[in-house]
Length: 488
Length: 134
Image (tube, rainbow over all chains, first blue to last red; front, top):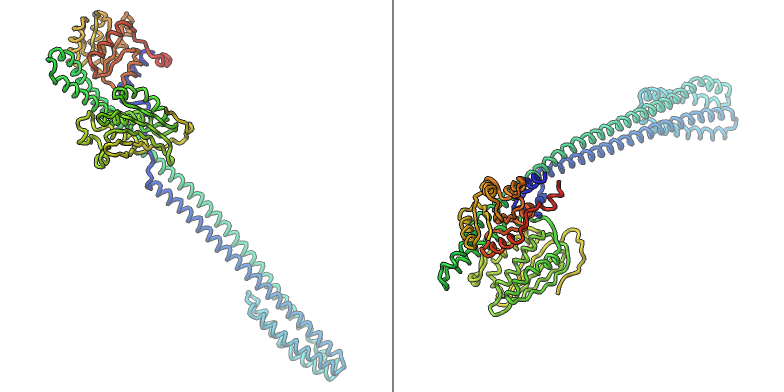
């Protein structure tokens, strides 16, 4: 069991040999542009919103219509009932005044009563004119016309009764008025009927209003259900669209990851296949040393050539591996502190000085990549030192405007403006430093490391005085360390 | 001087190693892959196996595992891993050997490592993590 595990583990390691611990996961970031799915989802919700707005407008219009209907019914009914009631009481008052006229013997009182009767007649005419336009209900107009005719027809007998009364022929006057009793009763009945008609119309209109309100409620309920159903359908459709989009994105991420792995494996394979013959050449140097006469430069040329090929393979591998190590974060202070020991022999060999003052922080960059970047920058500083001047390298780091700046400064050769503009290009080597060993990949690796981590590399330089390279890195989301620092 | 076995699929490298190690007085045999290496081990137990990792037919670690599985004393032979694979230290950890050297190496480094392995004679032992994984 143990052995099989070992073999499987070995197979994994050999097959994915190119992978590092920092390689896990892919660097898939959703695009910021509006995808078709997002457009469709937005459209769907816009449609739902428009539906709700339309339903609201419809409900508002219906409510207004209902209010108008209710107001119209109320006005019609109240006006009709009030006017008919008023007419009824005016007719009643007229009968009383006529009776008073018959009863009285005093000529002056009679004249006064006649004046009151004339005013009352005028008032009755006004009331009748006011009521006339309201008589619109079915049957109301006929009854009203009959009552109106009856009122007009009563004027003659009443005038005759008044004439008898003025002549103090009260018995005849009373006879005329008694004869009108039935007709007055008929008139009262017609007026009551008018009130009843309006009452019925109001009741019918109220019933109609209730029906309209019921229909409105049902319509709104239907619209609500339709909106609910529509939202459910849209949600299902939108979910499918989103799921499809996510699936597509995942598929792309997987393909990308697989390609990265292939590329990494390819780089590993190439490196392996170059390193093996290099090993043979390097070993072959041993017997050659005994065969080549002392002072012959051939061995030196061979050694330098092998060294350059080794460096080139290492740099190419480092460059190929950057994209697969973009995940992770680290503390630059710890990384630099660890590197200090490794870099010390190199500095001592050149009689140089390395000063470190790096603040603690958590930056978005894998530890492996930051090690690579710092090593390359320090190597670079040492490699391009001024003749006769011992290299002095300062590594400092601190947060700045929400990001982290790791600076590597030297007192070396510095660069011209033209060189500074091209120094991050792969394989670019300044004509002034062609004689120094190097692959031309060191700084482009640092630049790629910074960019792959979401940052950038910049350089400040002065020819003949030195350079400062700044790796600008984003801070990790949750820094777990304070702004302490390491330095001496 | 010791009885050594070199297993490497690079013919030139194998020949050079034989030649250089023999010049130091060692007795050296060479195999081209894990399968040949196993046959040579079975024929006569060497004092040290210098083993490439990535080889046809049978890789270096697979050969080590089979030596381990046979349980005929082969598991006690120290192994020196010599390879151009990038994660050689990880492979060495899984194989359980403290002796490994990345290609390309020079002869003095190889010579020092062989001398150290012959003095210490530490047999491969599975990594603790691998044991715990059972």
